[in-house]
Length: 124
Picture 1 (cartoon, helix red, strand yellow):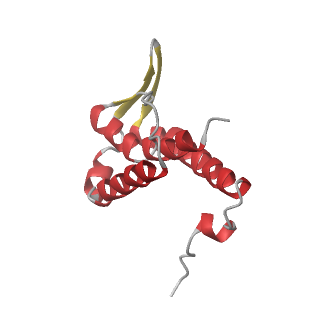
Picture 2 (tube, one colour; picture 1 turned 30 degrees about the vertical axis):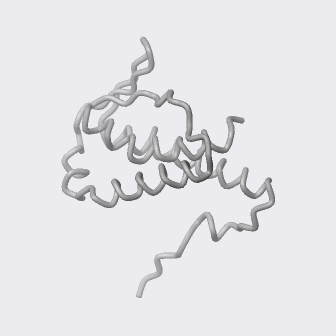
């Protein structure tokens, strides 16, 4: 298993990085080293959340049906934008988020399932 910092970085890559890839039409793995401190991880996460909050729903809608490619070296996988998000980036995001969560629990952080799943969106 890759280290905690890599897992956190990967959640940012498969959220904001996926959107940036849709804008370009290609997504490639971010091979830069992850932030080295917990404080730097918090900054990266905060910057990602801030950038995601600024994205207009109409922009996301405009990606539907657009061609999108995952490129790693000579390896290329072609998708529609929505299939890239739903079958590649979203599963990767949840994999790395769950792994991050598991590492925190393993290290003794007192968090439970509800901390991971968040607030329920009940009908009102």
